[in-house]
Every structure is written in C-alpha cells, then in structure tokens.
Amino acid sequence: MSQRLPAAAPDRILRETAVRIGSSPDLGETLRAVARAARRALGADRATCYVVEPEQDVVSAVYTTEEDPRRRAVVEAAAGRGPNDLPIWRVILSRPDPLLVIEDLSASAEVPRALAARLGSGALVGLRLEHRPVPDTAAPELLGTIFWSYRRPRTITAEDRSVALGLGSMAALALANARLHAQALHSLDRAEREAETDELTGLANRRGLDRRIEEAVARRAPGGRLSAIVLDLDGFAGINDRHGHCAGDDALRAVARAVEASLRPADLAGRLGGEEFLVLLPDTGSKGAWLVAERLRSRIADLSAAAERLTASLGVATMPDHAASAGELLRAADSAMYAAKATGRNRSLVFEPRAARSRVETSRLAQAGREAYLGSILTLAAAVDARDPSTHAHSATVARYAAAIAAALGLGGDRIEEVRVAGLLHDVGKVGVSDAVLLKPGPLTPADWSEMRRHPEVGAGLLVHPGLAEVREWILRHHERPDGGGYPGGLRAGRIPREALILGVADAYEAMTADRPYRRALTPAEARNELARHRGTQFDPEAVDAFLECLAADGAAEG
Image 1 (cartoon, rainbow, N blue to C red):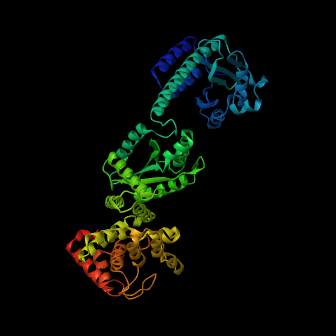
Image 2 (image 1 turned 120 degrees about the horizontal axis):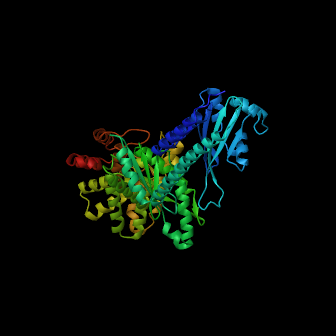
C-alpha cells in the first residue's frame, strides 16, 4: 500500500501547483504539473489528465505520470476517442456528482475487471473537469477529466476527496483559460482571413494577394524562379448582361474551384477583381507555368454558365526572367494576358518583350487597314501563331523580313505595306490544321504533310475580300519554288508572283532560326548558308541576294 503523506504536504503541493499554473501559459506543461501534483498529494501510483476537444467531442490530449510502456499505452489509447466510447468515462459522465470514487475495483460492477487488470488498478478516483457558463442555468461544459489510480484497493478519505476537488478546480481553470485563449486566437485568425478573403469565391482577395506575393518574392532563393499566371474570363460581361449577375457569380465560383483544383500544394491563388484571377507558382519556370496555365484553361473550357461555354485568356511571367519585383511580375503577366486576348482569346501566352512589340505592330496594322475585314483576318492569323508557344511571333517576324526584302528590291511604299500584311497573313490557313499535326513534337508522316500542305489553299480561301485579291494570290503561292518542286501548284519561276517568292525567303529564314519542339534553331550564319545553297532552286535568287544584303547591313534584322 502507498505511503500516506503528512497532512500538511497536500496544502503545500496545492500552493506550489497553483503558482506553477499561474506562471505558465503552456497547457501541456500545466496539466503535466497537475498530474504530478495529484499523484504526490494523494499518494497515488498514477495520475492522468485528459483534455476534451469540444467541437469534435473527442479526447484530444493525455498527460500521465505512468512510466510502464504497456500501461501507458492503455492509458493513452483514449486519445482520439469520444468520451462515451470509454467505459470508465461513461461511468463518471452518468453520475450527478463529478467525483467518482471506487475503493475496490475487483468488487465493483461499474468497471470491467479486464480493463482494471490492463490498467493495473485496484482503486480509482476520477473527477470531471467542467466549466459552468454564466448564467449557470445552462448545462456545464465538459473540459476533461483527472483520474488517480492505485495498484491495490484503498480507503479514500474525506481529505483525499477535498484535495482531489482542489486540484480539479485548478486543472479546470487552466483548461477553461486555455480554451478561451484558443477561441480568441481563432477569432482573430478568422477575422484576418476574412479581411484577406474574397467573399464570393473564397479565394484570397487583392489585399491578401499583395501580401502573399511579397512573401513569395522574399522567400525566393537566389537564382530561384517564381511565376505568375493572370487569368481573365473571355466575354464575361456578356454573361452578366444576358443572364444576370447571379449567373455571373455562379460562373466565378466555378472558376475559383477549377483554379483550386489545378494547384499544387505550394501554389497560391486569388481573385484580383472582377473576372480576373491570379495564380502564384513558387520554384516554377516559364515552361512549367505555361503547362499549369494550359491545364487550367482546359478545366475552364469544360465549364459553362447559363448554358454558355466559358473560356479564359491567360498570361504567364516569371522572375527573374521577366521581372525584378512583385509589381513588375504582375504587370508582365497582365501584359501577356492581354496579348492572349488580342490574338484570339482562349489561350495561354508567356510574356516576351519582343513578341509584345510585334503584337503591337500587328494591332496597329489591323487598325490602319483598309477594311474592318482585314483587321479580323489579322487577328485570326495572330491566333494561329499563338496556338504553338514556340511560334507565337512567327508571322510578325516574317512580315518584318518580307518588308525589308521588298524595300531592298525597290518596291513602292504601298506595295511594301501590302507585302508586310501578306507576311502577317501567310500562315492564316493553318487554322485548318489539327493540333495533332501543328504541335507534333517529332517529324511529320506523309499523311501529316498532306494535311500541312493544304494551308496555303485554306488561307487563300479565307481572303475573300476583293481588296485582298493580290495578297490572296501571294499567300496561295508562297510555298512554290523556282525549280517547280513547291506546292500547291508546282509552279516554276516566271509563273510565281515576285511577292510570293519574297514571302518564301522570309518564311524559311525565320523558321530556320527559331527553335521547334523537334529540333534546335540554326545559327544566323547557318541559315544564311542554307539560303545561298538553295539559291535558284528552292529560293528566288533576287530575293535571297536582297535579303542577305539586308542582314549584312543591319545585324538587328537577324532578330
């Protein structure tokens, strides 16, 4: 039998414990101190404090003085279980008196003997720890329990009961204060989250995004990458106009869920405002970010609002490639997004300063064109280029080269401008080429080439406006060769328009000096040698000579 402590000892232990509780904000440390004090003050072989998590109604923590590993495992097995699932707890919860005393467990019908044996207990004292709300007419709130265990049966005196109640009051106070503190922190955290959360979508709002992007920039390791995707829904104002703002709100919520479903654990997302969203991708370069953007664009294309299909334009930018600060990163991604809209919408583009200037030039030509029809065709041509990220500035570059060749050959100002427009439109017929062929990462099969070689005819068929008759003929013939080995007509020199031959040289040089998924670009010198080697067979001699002179006179024209 455990030796009893002198009568004065419990009072001293209670005072020491009260001081410890008052000086420590840590709940675990406090309850471990209560368990140790309970064992000492009552001469128990083991004391255990349990904490109840109120919202889930389960035992969330166990603090025990038990040192034997097997019995400690039995005691700690209560964690994660509901109070009513535990046999001894059911006994203490069913009684009006919070104090449970069993002096001889072997003679008690309330606790299974097998459980008592696993616990190694002959006698038991238990106390419900409760918080009584104000006013106290409401039912008390269960905070947890304390159990004192003795290996052998034992008489529990009135003094033992008084000490147990005193320790229980201290433990209940510590638990109540800890719960109140946790609730205050939770309320503060919730208020902060709500201040940075978009009420409609549940994503971060502009305030939250501003803070998070600064944090992401600060966390970026030297030389590391941070990418941003700016997403804007296409034609969203029309959904609100035709179906009302409720339909628009439903669409925004659906897009928010699609954004969340496309993220990796470390990624962040939020709503910039209106129908515009932002995604931040730590440790991700432009290529990886573009793939995420395409996955997201595909998810959105599967959505609908009021029976209308949703699409989005997305812009990608990366630190440090495109920006040196958070503000520059957002502006670059925003610029790429607007470029995606300008080139046909429902696409993802990576920010590229030179390509951005080319798209501005394309837009200027479209606005200055003779007809609104020309503007729409120019936009379609740019959209075709944008289907493949590796060629999204191809037509604008060909237009610049072709205009330079035309000027070097002495063509008039109006004709030079028409050649420039033809350069912008020369691949518009690829709108009829499938993605499987156009974006194929390897060599084309004969069937693939058959489909690809139709694009001059498709392009010419799109240019039905009478004012574009000559441009239409140049585009139809820009893959013809002086030796008759071209397509679609196999025409020879003398029957091919000079402007079409100019386009052929400009197109070939730009294609040779640009990377493709299935091959690396030639150097400018290698590409010039190829032009010279096929001069008179594949390429028009005068156009080749004029272009080589332009390249020699102006190295910047090599792009």
